[in-house]
Length: 129
Image 1 (spheres, rainbow, N blue to C red):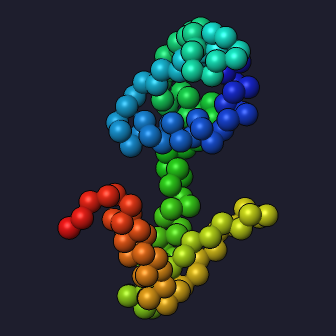
Image 2 (image 1 turned 120 degrees about the vertical axis):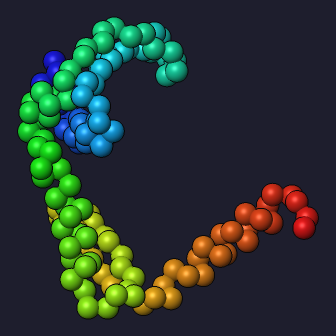
């Protein structure tokens, strides 16, 4: 059952393993639960809890620590290679392809968006300064 879940939810397992590595955790406990009543999405019963070594779980999911952050490193290296030190970039994932695209945008891009949101939030809180 665990192998099937690792295959069907590989991203979740990779995220959990990476979080364990970052926190220094060596053991991961997985709990399997079911709904107490199929109509109620908030009440569950724990059926079983399994304890796994993070290294063994990573091996089963073919997730290696040395290449876990390869995409992030590639993005950081690409940004560092840019000649302009004071640049602003937008990272976009292509929805139809497994491709990340990095676009350089003018420095003033997105500047007014945050100020407008903060002003709207201040007006809605009901307090008068």
